[in-house]
Length: 170
Image (cartoon, rainbow, N blue to C red; front, side, top):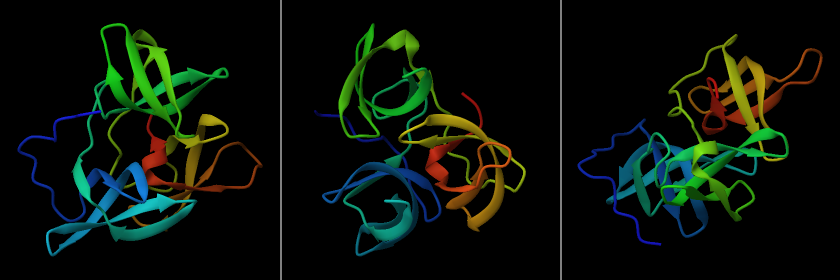
């Protein structure tokens, strides 16, 4: 797949970006600093925040567009996918499991750009690989600007979510 790079965007430390490296797929991360022309970024890796160099970084795309993150129907819920190709009627999405699935474009839901910060008490839709998006409330800030504890249902234990897996609404 060939995709043009974001045009004219200047990234700064603290910005949210779509990043890629040979050891990670395209993920949403927070940029830390540039070191010898290469960005260091903080991203979610297996439920923990990892900081490391990335080979490419560009601003997150909004809307239903190539390299944009969208919601799509799966098993009666809304799941998360990265648009890798798009036609007038269909979208090819890389899912959370790493597979590519084809979905009707009209069923794709644009996800808002990741918020820079969440506060205790904020209502969110939290994404998990198994359950898709579920409504919840932020209960604690675990790593400011990066990771949050979210209660998904009354009486259930809170769970940790990286900021890229939280949206305001679907």
